[in-house]
Length: 121
Image (cartoon, rainbow, N blue to C red; front, side, top):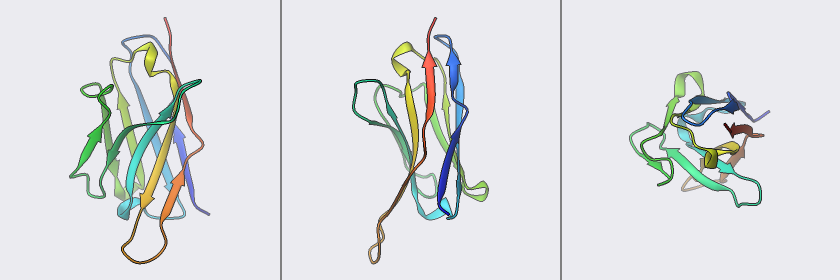
């Protein structure tokens, strides 16, 4: 069974840090682009960061550049999001995504259940 399970969310004060983990099972992430998205109440889901299969290419949303770091350990089938200098506007449910679009064959697009991150004084 294919699963993505996020962990590491919680309540933190402004300026604090959290590290999200996303553990995959039922498939190997090594051939997938892995991404973190977030959705705040009343807002659309937005891309936070993504990382290519080997980690050679990484992209961040402007709002998190310099504060968040995405990384992956293909051997552990896990992707991470280190979040530093957190702000109240970072409050959201954070989702892990695995995407593979082969030249031939079926597109694979998997989502985790989400992890709540709340930044409040």
